[in-house]
Image 1 (tube, rainbow, N blue to C red):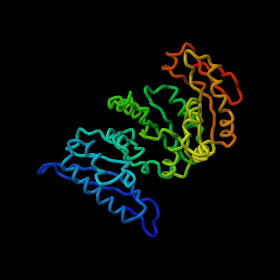
Image 2: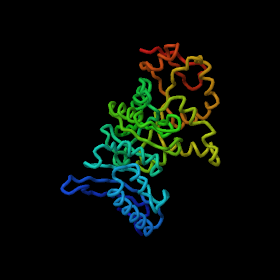
Image 3: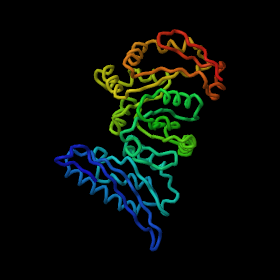
Image 4: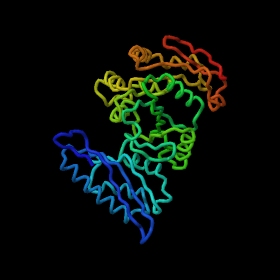
Length: 338
């Protein structure tokens, strides 16, 4: 554990764990977690760690048959503004049937943290293990299903990502994107995770509904470039004032926060069957000035997809082309799928 001191003024953090035998001569089981301490005084940090340690020991011996309940019990006597648990891992014969990806989801659902990650092999990791001082390229989506268009946007963004080393690629799903109605279907979540794993991607589960709140989280991990691969529909949402009504000086502040992410890429999606392409593009005219400002400051780089088209979208659309628009154009260019 590293707490605050006279020479260390940053937030405290560290690793905790317990290894135990559930029966005599049994193989040991263990619970490992990573903790961020949010108190501003080192004595309160030490107190919080003491509470957390006692709760962990109690949970391991009395709540091990119900891991979600064990996780919720970790904050007994504490509050969420004092402790953040951003990684937890269960191992051993007692937890043979536990999927750690579901436990990572539990951390976000129960508000222990705003984001957790796991690799393509299904191993949960602490974000800094993968992201520390690395350039990052992230694509947000529901990935239900994963289309060729989604992958084409990511590959085009990766090809244009300017960095001295290859970026770490993250596929992000928010809790809202995982919900079916008012709940999250766990088999559906695992199916999406398995599909992304088959493609070799690291998955991030977050509760950051807005991009400008995701950026500070990533900035804690790295000072290097951060890129967002997104479609034109997502760019429109980024400029929607309703997402910034709770912020003073909304327009200025959102661009100030977004400017910390120094690379961003966009691509137009295929049109809906009921909307002609020209009509679709006019929906975005009211944000053309904001988009121009981003492009002029090299914070946004439009790119064109000419060789990829999603069979899922093609099946739903009566047209076989995707509209591709450059800034200043009022009509899309037809690009045939190949």
